[in-house]
Length: 123
Image (cartoon, rainbow, N blue to C red; front, side):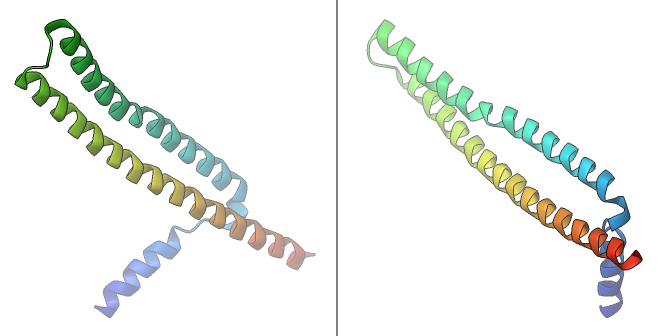
């Protein structure tokens, strides 16, 4: 078990960015975060569309034929349930991206400090 932990540790440490690559790592991080933000933008519209569709069903059928039939109520409930599920999924994804953003900011700050220390050490 100890050998496996060392292997995982070595692989993780090998993937850490180096201070010499600070500028390219900053650009990669900005690209990654922009990609995640774009995906979240579209992900937030799914629950809004589902709940809007559910409300439209009730509004249209309620005003045309009187009280909504059981089939309409069932469709409304299904769409609202799906909307809630997608909203929870969006909130989880949003939290993940926010956490990733904080971690990347910390990494960039550490890399910048390391690069600064290396420059002062070389002088």
